[in-house]
Length: 183
Image 1 (cartoon, rainbow, N blue to C red):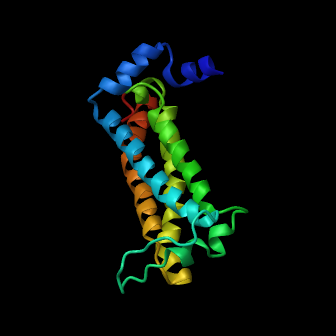
Image 2: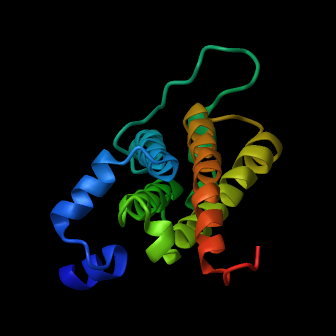
Image 3: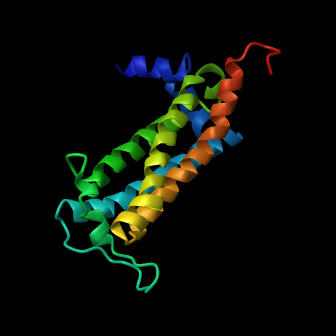
């Protein structure tokens, strides 16, 4: 399984070559991938806090002490919608961030040339996550819950940022699939 995954994501590179390519590259796509890793970890942290509430490990989440907007993390994260997936939604969001992080970390720095499916998959995974985050941010919290969750706002912003960082490499990958002279 390990060698199959290595070959699929990194081709003929050995682990040492892969490590050097990932860690030492100063290319813009690799910098964006590092950004996706960092942003995904922020999203995981925010949803980790929410998971504590949703699974009963804590009874209350702190909110910013403001009158407007109306922050009420407990209300938002214990709503019917938050449990409508057959489980709390925060652990599912953590899993989505973990998948995004793994795809961002996969393959050498120039993967868009030899493994264009990886950047395309990264965008394909990031886009629906951002759409769901947008629905929560622009509809569920303001219109249905009539309350805001700062942890969820941070999470939604991480999804939007991930899309922004994923698209440039996906476009490069798409161009690499085009026949010469087609662009």
